Image 1: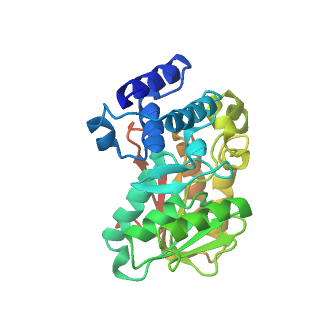
Image 2: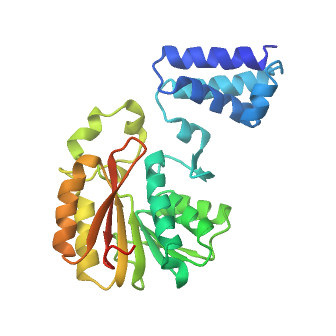
Length: 290
């Protein structure tokens, strides 16, 4: 039987030769999953033997990955902000850049918003990644997580239950802010923001993801525009509320203009991602103190 080192090396070579992005990391994740061991153990036990059933299981994963099916869909989970989440083809795979949204929402809470019971809306919740993490880190908060699709909400419901935050995260079906039963302090939204025409040009893995979770209309900001209009027109955001919107850096200027039109008195700022690109638009009705 081959040892762990040789299996890991061969898996890496196979993925790399097929042009799979991050081949080394993905090989490690595949092997860890099949061997049921953490990363530290995998490197500490390089001489461990890999059994024929384990080899077969690994090969099945590799063959699916060679079709460019995303690894998160094959393994049915993705780590986001330190927690594992159920993922399947009914939901967008959580991206690292969305962690900026979580960090900024937590920062605002720690800067004073947590002094009262914080009510948050995670709009277009998908896997529930944002809602779950905010609930875990803000035990005094109540969170509404909305989405338009039953299959998506089923995934979010599983993740909410798995992380024991069902008592504080309420799932709601409907269009953007419409299902909210009360005004909220914070709206966080990672809505579809890809221009329709760009989607077919993206890497093969993206084509496996649900179109409704990617397509932001001709200019990529159709849903962002509607959310801002709903927030401005209705009673869904408190007088000193905050809106956090993730988007492509190129959409920041038009979205800022829309936000300024909807909320002329608001303080509008941006947060940058790890690559230094503007990624999150923050609209604070309370002014610059948040």
